[in-house]
Amino acid sequence: MAGSAKQKLRVAVVGLGVGLQHCAAWRELTERFELVSVCDVNENLAKLVSEKLEIPHFTADFDSLLAGDDRPDLLDICTPPHLHFEMCVKGLEAGLHVICEKPLVPSLAICDELAAIESRAAGRLMPIFQYRFGTGLLKLQHLIAQDLAGRPYLSTIETAWQRGDDYYAVDWRGKWKTELGGVMTTHAIHAHDILCSVMGPVKQLFARTATRVNPIETEDCAAVSVEMGNGSLATLSATLGSRPEISRLRFCFEKLTAESSLAPYTPSFDPWTFTATDDGAQARIDEALEDFEAGHQLYAGQFQRFHEALASGGPLPVTLADARRSLELLTAVYHSSRSGEPVTLPIGDDHPAYAGWLPPSS
Image (cartoon, rainbow, N blue to C red):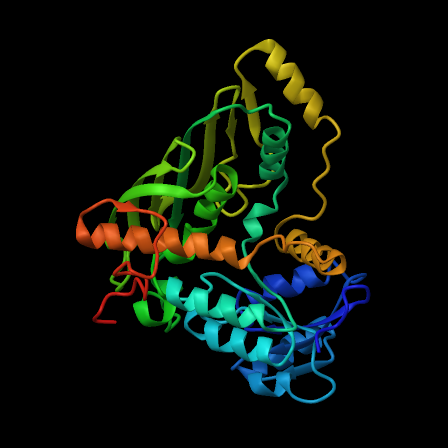
């Protein structure tokens, strides 16, 4: 049975690619969590990480983590995307809490199935969207909550990164069946989640995608025109062929314009600029932010809030509904790019892409 959040939760990290970043975050939160095991198909890597980080247990056998009285309270799944669903289900059925990297699963249908499984489980499941927990973005959300932003007008979301032969030398990358998509699924997904966390759900979009940078199956360039449910507009651009690498988040509101730095992998971090429409509004914004404290950022920020939610019984900092909204946007992008038509959201079980956005040939 999953452990109580009033005590330390015992964590096992599964997959030691991005999982190494998760390990570092767990080690920032030793008052709440104890990292007790690492698991990777490369047993030598698991052993090396276990020894280097002084983690008591390592294994190459995922199923062994679920057996016995010494199993963890929490599985942190950082494996390639095509493995997520089965591992999440096994963890929940074993009575554990589960945290899982993005993209969570390959379709809205499977996401809905996973939500039904979680609703019957003793443990809780939290998808990863660590970019939500950066000081700059949290400041914007604080200003919105204080009614200092006003009516939303336009959002501009740019993900311009560089990926080449070294990145795609990893066998499962660049393939529909295992990576589940390209720049929109694996790279820009965080920035687009931020758009929805600030602006709410998408109403309609039109998308173009292309494969121009690398000899891969999946897309590495995209341009998307979006109408949000709140009436504002947004543009999304993404490429894996940019030097320099940048990420940019820009939100234009009635009372202020908020803009991130160009840091490619920490766009939600400070410094952000918040420029008001007049001096009086600027003074109110500056005062509202004077003593603002965000706490831990990125993975550590999300994990800390996860523990607090378990302790209080409140909503998780990122929910399955959030993951579904992200997958719904992906579904709409791929369907629009293939059909040449705009897509209206929400997408229900009667939509032709509800069962998955992967092309039939995959």
